Image (cartoon, rainbow, N blue to C red; front, top):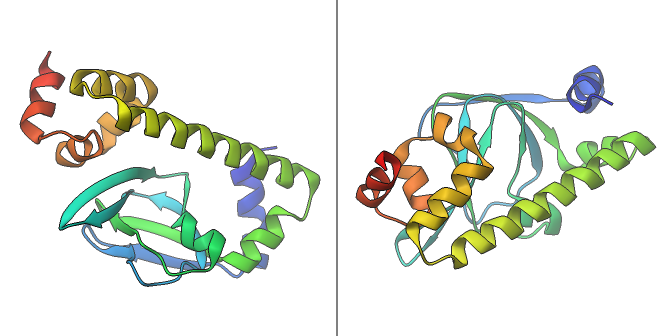
Length: 176
């Protein structure tokens, strides 16, 4: 099953809302409750958390992918994350209720959802290992081998933040 084709064919039934963000605009901020799943049509976003006035980039979202503030989306509680456009971005927003009903409407979509959640859990596990890796060069290598797309589409200062290093350290590693 081509998930995106299936999604596109059902869009009218899902009552979508188109949303446009300029670079630097926020899709969601802490304190809000996430009520939508978004298909990124064009552009890139970053999800980050702020603690003690320091930003910690958690993940990135690219065109052709779904994005949402997962903890709030799943729990219905206030969000703690920022989702920010890194460049001009267009999205299709589907309400949580319609998105979940659609995902559970056929066995094929349920299977896709399970596979998507499995990939997400594995990605989170990889990310946790990255964060526990003390060597900046090893973190760089792990992410580079896992996701070239990051290095093609994301500004360097955000990759450095994601890798928990200064832009200067990142620049040195990138050159070597």
